[in-house]
Length: 331
Image 1 (cartoon, rainbow, N blue to C red):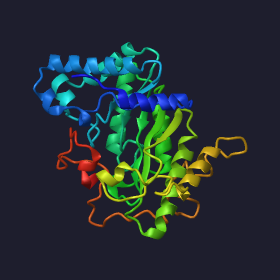
Image 2: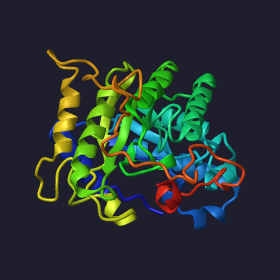
Image 3: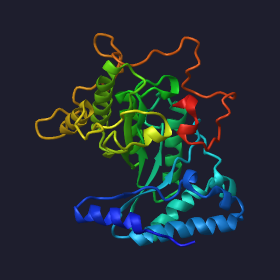
Image 4: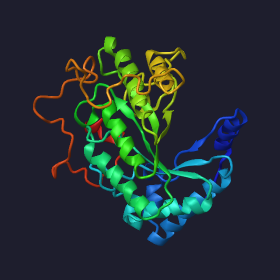
């Protein structure tokens, strides 16, 4: 096959012309890889094609893209390694190999691991958040050239059980323990779905989530940035993969929403005159009056106990390589 970087070059060159920095996303993700073709290859052939892809892509953009998500979503919902095409062909060490190849391709690049539903320590997705930490700790211990990680933050304000948004305290604690590994942490794909809430609660919830999560993250020295997964509700992946929604900080007419001001205020918490933490709950999930975080809009858990936060042998999700939008019960 032949690589065609025409469209990507146009985007990157435009960004650099306007003095914007570009993060490359993503070098290795099984969901967007040609599984049918790879299944026909031997392990040796898959290994060589994976190495070739990393060297070709990073080589083309070397000097223009300095930060890369190297591997994306290699974890199953229970925190184990997803048994995707690369795992089945090459074994779990494929992740280490990808980072080593990426470092060889561009020794000056910052290399990141990226995953979803890993944002909160001891939160709604404890198993996966713990697996995320263990994976990164293992990479660091083995001397793998990984410099940081991305926690995606695709939140559903109306979620229950494993779909419930983590609290600011949970996010802060997750970033803190990752930072102790010597890694930087970024919120890499943030958006906040609200269409399943009552209309009068949507902007309230969205503003609070954008504000409080970012304000809490900014209290941790390891936190080094936030990327939004789009900026206007007119163009959002959510509509195509889930349902009609309004998850971003600008509306369909490019008007600023309450979420915009929430995010702006969170960022101002670290500017001169700002209050670090912006008075967000950081040590507890309840205020002095006993009100839990998000109590105005957070949905109650179901009474039959089906909305769980950990996995059992009956979940059949251990090793699953399915993306979130195919695991409807988790979203």
